[in-house]
Amino acid sequence: MFISITELTFHFFFSFASLFLLRKVALHIGLVDKPNARKHHDGAIPLVGGISICISLLFFLINNPMIIPHVELYALCIVILVSVGALDDKFDVSYKLRFLIQAGLSVGMMYLAGIKLHTLGYLFDPVELTLGPAGYVVTIFAVIGAINAFNMVDGIDGLLGILSTVTFSGLGLLVMLDWQLNIAYLCLVIVVIMLPYILFNLGLFGQKRKVFMGDAGSMLIGFTVIWLLLLSSQNEGPSPLRPVTALWLIAVPLMDMAAIMIRRVRRGDSPFKPDREHLHHIFQRLGLNTKQTLVAIALIAIAYAGFGVYGELAEIPEYIMLYSFIICFVLYCVILSYIWVISAKVRKWLGVEKGVSEE
Image (cartoon, rainbow, N blue to C red; front, side, top):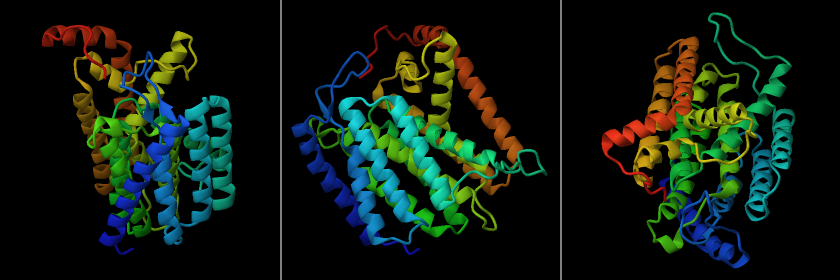
């Protein structure tokens, strides 16, 4: 598909304008995030980043109805997710209800659009690992997992926006090289639409105009990522994206979610109980401030995605890509298990005092 600079510029300013207006509405109706024991920001911050991105994306889809197959179904799904997310931001909806809705949308995606995991690729080369009927169940878990991975990683200013930008950029590059040009262009449009949110979220237009993504936005991003990953890796083209590559494109959110949930279960807590043991908390305990933490995690995400892109282009055997991912995840879990000891030693070595700011 032809890349239109004019169209991209228009959607950037459309997203910017919608975000500017929606933040005022959010302040009026109380759709805001207030500081508490786990959230150390200043004042009530409007939770409209996700709603703005959704409206801007819908406007693009209306004017480009052939950009991907079953665009109407995808649009309906994100409207439902963003609506549920906004209600959750306002009234704190039960996670069980959210999971039920996410599972329902994944079923609709499979049966109405035919998008599901039917193969995991050649993880046991030269035998292709197909899922058969189990693909329906695996797809449901994949959708719920992707949505909540991006939801749980949203902990400091700019993090969700940067991580999702890395994911969509890596995916866009790979599908472009595979001549899946419509999906590549959609990835580019999503990045452009998210850019105003990232600028507002980082406070580049002033702290008084800061906004947060909210659960509405994180669920929208997670669902969009898994929809496009399945669409590009499970198609019947000559060289679709290999499924194992998807792990590297969402490595940081996925590893962070899985490791935290495993740790909570081992402690006897609910895997959905909030805490301060995410990757960004770890870096802050090591003495990094918020901006340094953002840069560090962004570089890790870029490295992971870059390795995924390289592995795809260099055709590194899929089992090697999988084992490499597992090794990275195990190392992360081990580090997380001893993070208190490691952070104490690192802080002592760096001469960092206790009580570093976790703004």
